[in-house]
Image (cartoon, rainbow, N blue to C red):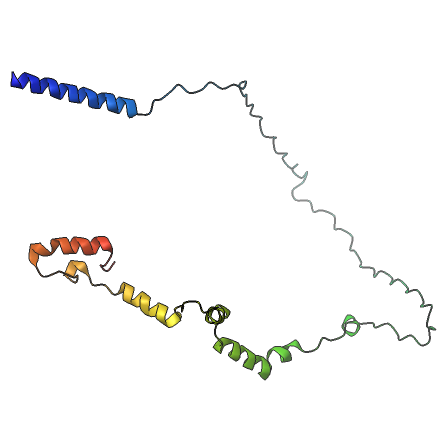
Length: 189
């Protein structure tokens, strides 16, 4: 009778598991029916392209278009100034280059020795964020050299496949150390 009891107990446990899985499984319900009326789409044909008419005689030449001449437009006369007599007014410039005054040489301003010296001084000065951190007594931030050293030290790991990891050299006993080094990322990629 011991076997029958165990079999009944196993069947009861299996039924409980099936019921639990069926109870926790998401139930699929029927998709909701749309409440809006059906949508109809009608496809319209594309308009046909109009073919160009062929010329009546392919060997005949078209008559030459008459040559066009560019006629200069007359300049509008300027209204006379009311304040000054016309004789004291300078003659209007005939060339556009004469009408626009030449700007001061910007190239001399950019390429001057004072500009070069200001650029060198700005490059040597610490960054504004570093100056603000030192003035506010904030904890020291690492500079570019310290950051580079930290990155080099972070990537200076040995090749685990060649046995360059802590705990190597023990044969099969070093297998847990190899797995730990792989999982923690202390192996060369």
